Length: 130
View (cartoon, rainbow, N blue to C red):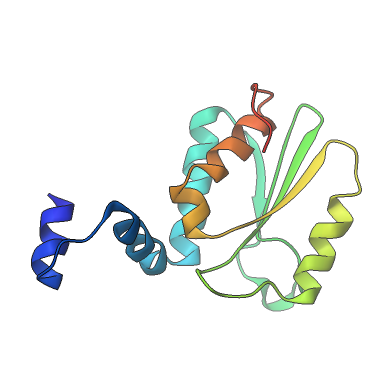
């Protein structure tokens, strides 16, 4: 039904790849964060943190932090095409130096392609390497 609606809107057939690109561009960072938190909870992640209002927080700190059984995941969220600033890259690099910690910058296309799910499975000790 979605493909039919998109095809009618553009008056031309749209491929699945183009549809995913359109969906990724339309997804906000807030929506992406909500989807990741919901998926994490569904997989059993109980310890996660996101800054509610970053106005007075340290510049560049990751959007989401998740930990489980000695593993940690620092996640920076970005809209499609939006670059990762050096300050945010520095935070992710620092967390990446900890044993058992992974750092990721995820965009909506990563979510739609399943890369976020793979990282969450790794966090929960399931047999997947992000």
